[in-house]
Image (tube, rainbow, N blue to C red; front, side, top):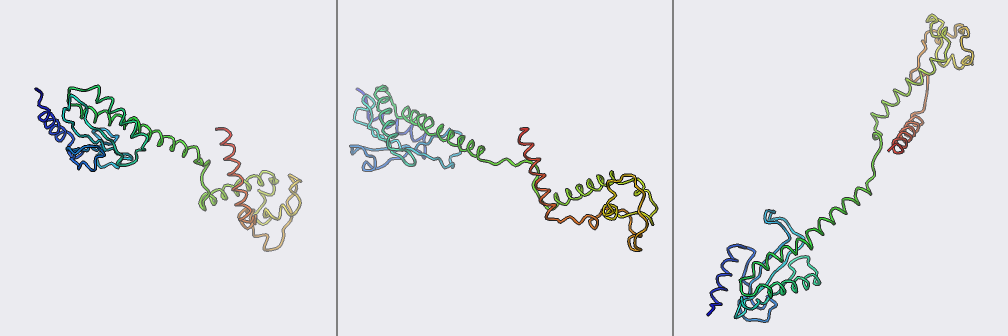
Amino acid sequence: MTDYVQEQEMEIEALEAILMDEFKEIHSSESGLNTSGRCFQITLSPQDDEADESTNMPVQLGLIFSHTEKYPDEPPLLNVKSIRGIPVEDLKILREKLQQEASENLGMAMVYTLVTSSKEWLSERFGQESSLEVAEAEERAKEDAIVPHGEPVTLDTFLAWRERFEAEIALERAKIMPESALTAPKEKKLTGRQWFESGRASAKGAAPVTEGSDEDDEEDIDFDEDDFEDDEEDMLEHYLAEKSDSSSHSSRRL
Protein backbone atom coordinates (compact mmCIF):
# COMPACT_ATOMS: atom_id res chain seq x y z
CA MET A 1 0.00 0.00 0.00
CA THR A 2 1.32 3.41 -1.03
CA ASP A 3 2.18 5.80 1.78
CA TYR A 4 0.97 9.02 0.16
CA VAL A 5 1.70 11.19 3.18
CA GLN A 6 5.32 10.11 3.29
CA GLU A 7 5.84 10.75 -0.45
CA GLN A 8 4.27 14.17 -0.11
CA GLU A 9 6.49 15.11 2.84
CA MET A 10 9.60 13.95 0.98
CA GLU A 11 8.67 16.09 -2.03
CA ILE A 12 8.10 19.17 0.15
CA GLU A 13 11.51 18.71 1.79
CA ALA A 14 13.17 18.38 -1.62
CA LEU A 15 11.44 21.50 -2.96
CA GLU A 16 12.51 23.53 0.10
CA ALA A 17 16.12 22.43 -0.40
CA ILE A 18 16.15 23.23 -4.12
CA LEU A 19 14.06 26.40 -4.27
CA MET A 20 14.96 27.86 -0.87
CA ASP A 21 13.54 31.42 -0.59
CA GLU A 22 11.34 30.94 -3.64
CA PHE A 23 9.36 28.28 -1.77
CA LYS A 24 7.04 29.10 1.12
CA GLU A 25 3.93 27.76 2.84
CA ILE A 26 0.87 30.01 2.72
CA HIS A 27 -2.55 29.92 4.35
CA SER A 28 -5.26 28.17 2.38
CA SER A 29 -7.28 31.39 2.27
CA GLU A 30 -4.50 33.00 0.22
CA SER A 31 -4.19 30.13 -2.24
CA GLY A 32 -7.36 30.51 -4.25
CA LEU A 33 -7.81 26.74 -3.93
CA ASN A 34 -10.84 24.92 -2.58
CA THR A 35 -9.04 23.13 0.23
CA SER A 36 -8.23 23.34 3.92
CA GLY A 37 -5.00 21.38 3.52
CA ARG A 38 -1.46 22.71 3.45
CA CYS A 39 -0.79 25.10 0.57
CA PHE A 40 2.52 26.25 -0.88
CA GLN A 41 3.60 29.04 -3.21
CA ILE A 42 6.66 29.06 -5.48
CA THR A 43 7.79 32.43 -6.83
CA LEU A 44 9.11 32.28 -10.41
CA SER A 45 10.68 34.78 -12.82
CA PRO A 46 11.72 34.51 -16.49
CA GLN A 47 15.45 34.50 -15.79
CA ASP A 48 18.37 32.09 -15.99
CA ASP A 49 19.75 30.43 -12.89
CA GLU A 50 22.99 32.43 -13.34
CA ALA A 51 21.20 35.78 -13.52
CA ASP A 52 21.53 38.31 -10.76
CA GLU A 53 18.72 37.63 -8.31
CA SER A 54 18.59 41.32 -7.38
CA THR A 55 17.55 42.20 -10.92
CA ASN A 56 14.10 43.74 -10.94
CA MET A 57 12.26 41.52 -13.41
CA PRO A 58 9.27 42.95 -15.32
CA VAL A 59 7.08 39.92 -14.51
CA GLN A 60 6.81 37.48 -11.61
CA LEU A 61 4.60 34.45 -11.17
CA GLY A 62 3.25 32.68 -8.11
CA LEU A 63 2.74 28.92 -8.66
CA ILE A 64 0.45 27.59 -5.91
CA PHE A 65 -0.22 23.94 -5.18
CA SER A 66 -1.71 21.67 -2.57
CA HIS A 67 -1.38 17.90 -2.36
CA THR A 68 -4.57 15.89 -2.66
CA GLU A 69 -5.17 12.83 -0.52
CA LYS A 70 -3.87 10.36 -3.12
CA TYR A 71 -1.18 12.49 -4.74
CA PRO A 72 0.86 11.55 -6.82
CA ASP A 73 -1.62 9.03 -8.17
CA GLU A 74 -3.93 11.96 -8.73
CA PRO A 75 -2.95 15.52 -9.76
CA PRO A 76 -2.34 18.22 -7.15
CA LEU A 77 -4.61 21.22 -6.82
CA LEU A 78 -3.01 24.01 -8.86
CA ASN A 79 -3.36 27.74 -9.18
CA VAL A 80 -1.25 30.54 -10.65
CA LYS A 81 -1.31 34.23 -9.81
CA SER A 82 0.49 37.28 -11.08
CA ILE A 83 2.85 38.80 -8.55
CA ARG A 84 3.86 41.40 -11.12
CA GLY A 85 3.02 42.15 -14.74
CA ILE A 86 1.26 39.01 -16.03
CA PRO A 87 -2.15 39.50 -17.74
CA VAL A 88 -5.16 37.40 -16.66
CA GLU A 89 -5.42 35.84 -20.12
CA ASP A 90 -1.85 34.52 -19.86
CA LEU A 91 -2.51 33.10 -16.40
CA LYS A 92 -5.47 31.15 -17.77
CA ILE A 93 -3.34 29.70 -20.56
CA LEU A 94 -0.59 28.67 -18.15
CA ARG A 95 -3.04 27.10 -15.67
CA GLU A 96 -4.53 24.91 -18.39
CA LYS A 97 -1.05 23.94 -19.57
CA LEU A 98 0.04 22.87 -16.07
CA GLN A 99 -3.13 20.89 -15.44
CA GLN A 100 -2.55 19.00 -18.69
CA GLU A 101 1.05 18.21 -17.74
CA ALA A 102 -0.01 17.08 -14.27
CA SER A 103 -2.40 14.59 -15.83
CA GLU A 104 0.46 13.26 -17.97
CA ASN A 105 2.77 12.72 -14.98
CA LEU A 106 0.55 10.77 -12.62
CA GLY A 107 2.29 8.25 -10.40
CA MET A 108 5.40 10.32 -9.72
CA ALA A 109 6.30 13.50 -7.83
CA MET A 110 5.63 16.19 -10.39
CA VAL A 111 5.73 19.62 -8.74
CA TYR A 112 9.31 20.37 -9.73
CA THR A 113 8.49 19.33 -13.30
CA LEU A 114 5.64 21.85 -13.25
CA VAL A 115 8.03 24.50 -11.85
CA THR A 116 10.46 23.91 -14.72
CA SER A 117 7.67 24.06 -17.27
CA SER A 118 6.38 27.32 -15.77
CA LYS A 119 9.81 28.96 -15.90
CA GLU A 120 10.26 27.92 -19.53
CA TRP A 121 6.84 29.33 -20.38
CA LEU A 122 7.69 32.63 -18.67
CA SER A 123 10.96 32.91 -20.56
CA GLU A 124 9.31 32.18 -23.89
CA ARG A 125 6.34 34.44 -23.27
CA PHE A 126 7.99 37.41 -21.58
CA GLY A 127 11.77 37.04 -21.87
CA GLN A 128 11.81 37.06 -25.67
CA GLU A 129 9.08 39.67 -25.83
CA SER A 130 11.05 42.01 -23.57
CA SER A 131 14.18 41.54 -25.70
CA LEU A 132 12.19 42.21 -28.85
CA GLU A 133 10.68 45.37 -27.39
CA VAL A 134 14.12 46.62 -26.41
CA ALA A 135 15.48 45.87 -29.89
CA GLU A 136 12.54 47.66 -31.53
CA ALA A 137 12.96 50.67 -29.25
CA GLU A 138 16.67 50.87 -30.11
CA GLU A 139 15.87 50.63 -33.82
CA ARG A 140 13.32 53.44 -33.54
CA ALA A 141 15.84 55.56 -31.67
CA LYS A 142 18.38 55.04 -34.47
CA GLU A 143 15.83 56.04 -37.10
CA ASP A 144 14.82 59.16 -35.17
CA ALA A 145 18.36 60.24 -34.42
CA ILE A 146 19.71 63.17 -36.43
CA VAL A 147 23.15 62.33 -37.75
CA PRO A 148 25.28 65.48 -37.76
CA HIS A 149 27.52 66.19 -40.75
CA GLY A 150 30.75 68.14 -40.50
CA GLU A 151 32.12 69.82 -37.42
CA PRO A 152 30.02 72.00 -35.11
CA VAL A 153 30.29 75.78 -35.37
CA THR A 154 32.24 77.24 -32.45
CA LEU A 155 34.11 80.49 -31.94
CA ASP A 156 37.44 78.72 -32.49
CA THR A 157 36.38 77.03 -35.71
CA PHE A 158 34.90 80.27 -37.02
CA LEU A 159 38.05 82.27 -36.28
CA ALA A 160 40.21 79.60 -37.90
CA TRP A 161 37.98 79.62 -40.97
CA ARG A 162 38.03 83.41 -41.13
CA GLU A 163 41.82 83.42 -41.11
CA ARG A 164 41.92 80.94 -43.98
CA PHE A 165 39.21 82.84 -45.84
CA GLU A 166 41.07 86.17 -45.61
CA ALA A 167 44.30 84.50 -46.70
CA GLU A 168 42.57 83.01 -49.74
CA ILE A 169 41.03 86.36 -50.66
CA ALA A 170 44.40 88.10 -50.29
CA LEU A 171 46.02 85.48 -52.50
CA GLU A 172 43.37 85.85 -55.19
CA ARG A 173 43.74 89.63 -55.17
CA ALA A 174 47.50 89.38 -55.34
CA LYS A 175 47.21 87.22 -58.46
CA ILE A 176 45.40 89.94 -60.40
CA MET A 177 47.59 92.86 -59.23
CA PRO A 178 50.34 94.02 -61.64
CA GLU A 179 53.81 92.85 -60.71
CA SER A 180 54.99 96.44 -60.69
CA ALA A 181 52.65 97.18 -57.79
CA LEU A 182 54.11 94.32 -55.78
CA THR A 183 57.78 95.05 -56.56
CA ALA A 184 57.72 98.85 -56.41
CA PRO A 185 59.91 100.57 -53.79
CA LYS A 186 58.27 101.09 -50.46
CA GLU A 187 57.75 104.79 -50.99
CA LYS A 188 55.83 104.09 -54.20
CA LYS A 189 53.91 100.99 -53.17
CA LEU A 190 50.15 101.21 -53.06
CA THR A 191 47.89 99.87 -50.43
CA GLY A 192 45.42 97.25 -51.63
CA ARG A 193 42.63 99.74 -51.24
CA GLN A 194 44.45 102.43 -53.22
CA TRP A 195 45.10 100.05 -56.06
CA PHE A 196 41.50 98.87 -56.30
CA GLU A 197 40.03 102.35 -55.81
CA SER A 198 42.23 103.66 -58.59
CA GLY A 199 40.26 101.51 -61.05
CA ARG A 200 43.36 99.76 -62.36
CA ALA A 201 42.43 96.25 -61.44
CA SER A 202 41.43 95.66 -65.07
CA ALA A 203 44.62 97.19 -66.43
CA LYS A 204 47.00 94.40 -65.54
CA GLY A 205 50.59 95.50 -65.90
CA ALA A 206 49.79 99.25 -65.71
CA ALA A 207 52.39 101.61 -64.36
CA PRO A 208 52.26 102.22 -60.64
CA VAL A 209 50.48 105.29 -59.39
CA THR A 210 52.63 108.10 -58.14
CA GLU A 211 53.01 108.93 -54.53
CA GLY A 212 49.91 109.76 -52.57
CA SER A 213 49.70 111.61 -49.32
CA ASP A 214 52.48 111.37 -46.75
CA GLU A 215 50.36 109.05 -44.65
CA ASP A 216 49.65 106.72 -47.60
CA ASP A 217 53.33 106.64 -48.65
CA GLU A 218 54.30 104.93 -45.46
CA GLU A 219 51.84 102.06 -45.93
CA ASP A 220 52.85 98.73 -47.48
CA ILE A 221 50.48 96.58 -49.45
CA ASP A 222 48.67 95.02 -46.59
CA PHE A 223 45.59 92.86 -46.53
CA ASP A 224 44.80 92.91 -42.85
CA GLU A 225 41.41 93.60 -41.38
CA ASP A 226 41.89 97.38 -41.93
CA ASP A 227 42.12 96.87 -45.72
CA PHE A 228 39.03 94.67 -45.97
CA GLU A 229 36.45 95.88 -43.53
CA ASP A 230 34.18 92.87 -43.85
CA ASP A 231 31.36 92.85 -41.41
CA GLU A 232 31.86 89.91 -39.04
CA GLU A 233 28.19 89.09 -39.13
CA ASP A 234 28.30 88.86 -42.95
CA MET A 235 31.36 86.65 -42.72
CA LEU A 236 29.62 84.39 -40.20
CA GLU A 237 26.65 84.05 -42.54
CA HIS A 238 29.03 83.21 -45.38
CA TYR A 239 30.81 80.66 -43.17
CA LEU A 240 27.58 78.97 -42.11
CA ALA A 241 26.38 78.84 -45.71
CA GLU A 242 29.66 77.26 -46.75
CA LYS A 243 29.40 74.66 -43.95
CA SER A 244 25.80 73.91 -44.94
CA ASP A 245 26.80 73.35 -48.58
CA SER A 246 29.62 71.06 -47.47
CA SER A 247 27.23 69.03 -45.30
CA SER A 248 24.76 68.70 -48.18
CA HIS A 249 27.47 67.41 -50.52
CA SER A 250 28.58 64.88 -47.88
CA SER A 251 24.99 63.65 -47.39
CA ARG A 252 24.50 63.18 -51.13
CA ARG A 253 27.73 61.18 -51.38
CA LEU A 254 26.47 58.89 -48.59
